[in-house]
Image 1 (tube, rainbow, N blue to C red):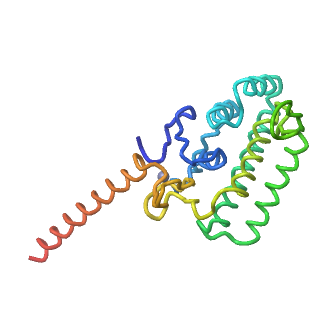
Image 2: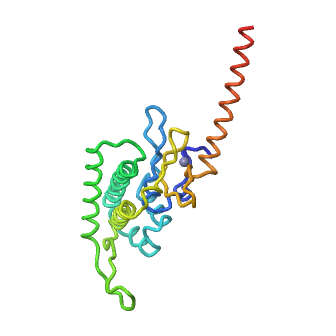
Image 3: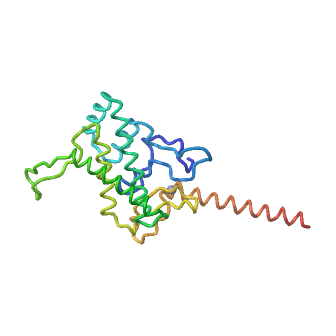
Length: 230
Ligand SMILES: [Zn+2]
């Protein structure tokens, strides 16, 4: 498997963020794309989005069927939902980079991103309902997303706010682009907080292999130069 996941199907895309909203950020490749190419978006169409939303736990099976029904009846609204999710995703990414100090982000960009997230959350709140809890410690619960057509973006906005408001910033990591990683974000839940790669089996191993190749190449070049000099 190559590190870019260019050929990975959405049904197999690794979910390694430790939070659904972080996995959402990781549905876009965060590495450096080939010159002239856009980074690959694994949420390529509404169908891919729905597969991912089920896997990430944003919607359950019954909700997924309701979403599919609403989208089949109105493809325009399905694409609007996808656009809304992508907006949440990119706003959240900027918010995470800035608030967790993962990458330099200017204040204007952060402010704009948080404004967009707030707008998405306001819309989601408008499509939510309070439900009475018949037997439980709480009197009511908040059900986010009561309109199937926009259920996925509404849950995504809710999840994005949750991670920004509750995640331990000191545990937020980005798979190190400068070290050959992929730029995905994740919560480091290791006991000593030493997790560096999003997936050791992929990014970590690949970087190690690349370093070995580079060392060998440098050693060969060094020998070549020595021969030329002598
Ligand atoms: Zn990675």
